[in-house]
Length: 131
Image (cartoon, rainbow, N blue to C red; front, side, top):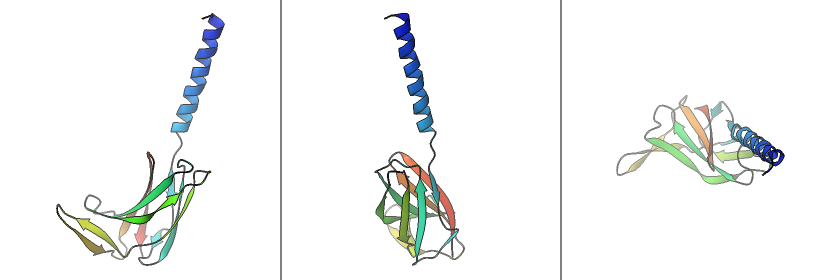
């Protein structure tokens, strides 16, 4: 391989690696209201996800993340712009699971909640409060 051709290949690889690093640096985000009300509809927006994919939503009480959560039953489609508008009715409870069973626990007023959007190899989280 000639020196000129080798330099061109090395340059092309460097440009490709830079583009890959820039793509990897893209960030996901989840935004929504500062307060949600159980039993009422709410809206969040997820950005930076892979276009054409889906995201799932999980709500966790901030002070009980290792035992408790509730997954929203639907998946939400991500548009060509990498954005998903997520509308769902806030569940009136979450599940507390032990080694053998799960029980329903009602949300408490002013309880902090982590809302997580998960897509293929990507995740975004925000915090809100039960109103």
